Image (cartoon, rainbow over all chains, first blue to last red; front, side, top):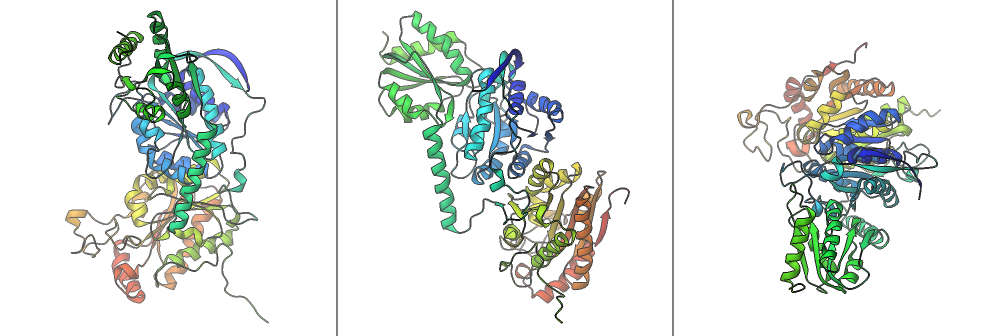
Length: 364
Length: 248
């Protein structure tokens, strides 16, 4: 692990932007949308200072192809947006995934559907972890619960995008983007390069003294199209095997309840864990850090010693489907959540969990 | 003594064409390849292929290539050229790609003055999908989605892309040429070479609109199609340089 610098107070969006620069990114394309616009504003100021490219595109759709074009040239690229903007980028993300390009995207989720509102939500979970655009593909999805973790996961997003030549998405919410917290920015011994390692082998940078490099996604021959899907699938299996990350809290013994929660909601749940313990309830939590790959095996293992598993989300119930898939009936799976926009406080979450425990006969 | 007076440009491959008999995409490909050769640009050029008949353009060029989604080539070219300004980047786009689904991308790439070259092929019809109404289809021209001829009261008048982009304040080079006849083709090459030269010099955005024939979807023989283009397309889409970069 690299060293850490001095502790400073930073707004989440600005810390995310600075983390991309620390990771070596020198190309950022964007379109303004609340609640992530500070990332664009920060980059507009910082990119020229570090000799990078900043460009505000005409739409999120165009931005997604600016990412494609630059990434196919072998440079590290980054964009940030929020839910409706990310929807517009889905076309390009599908092409980026098909072309196996390393691109990093931050989605600072706001509540939807439609224009929705501008307040924190986790309602883009399905879109992020199941592909999002057309075709059979996956993005690597990382869900930070603090600003420090958002910084660390941004660095990781660039590493994983490069390692697997795959889009990687930071899935944060408006709370992470808008609040301020102390953060220690990582310090690398030498600045990471602005280009992707090994890009000379595939990038479109001019066919001097070699054969053509071609970055494409059209495969009219059905066998080639089929084979691309096999190659992608093999890559996703590797990602699932090697890149699962999570945090466990109080999961070592038998549990009355196992909470599964991520991001801002997981922070609220941490307080609820204490409150439940004060009520004599043995509660533990599994916090997925990677949402894709999802910690299926870990949750399955923990479900064996939990009386009930509850997925706690800032949505009307999306991750709960993956939790059910992980638990495979080894314990009852329940959902507690709130539509994005109104973030429940720890008292409300604790009360909701107690109600579920009563309904499940864990509490009388 | 043997003297070579005509040969395949180095920028073209030996791939056998997939274009229909009589189609002028091949002519335009060759003009691009000749320009790249003559300006010494092949080794630093990246082409961006469209969606449409020319989606397989990368099979014919001996340069690096990216393949875009429908209409998005100018955005991809922007991303590449901004991060790799030393490359020569050109897009190759048809009328459905550039003038319908991709109007936002082409307008803003031109207006930002991206230092790329756009080869815009206007044959007044969608080719790959089998002959549908294009934004450049002429009034009363029959296509499979306007079987009674284009009714301008329902679908508007054909879009004049070169004229539209020529109105932009941002410096650029915009011209319209035709390749339906050798005399026009020779003129077209001069214009295209100028467009690539402006990019080589790092000067400005450039777009060359090529009037092109589509015998298959027009339902005409190649020679009939050439005559149809001259009679019907040139009066509506006049040829010439619409916009020159400042200080030229």
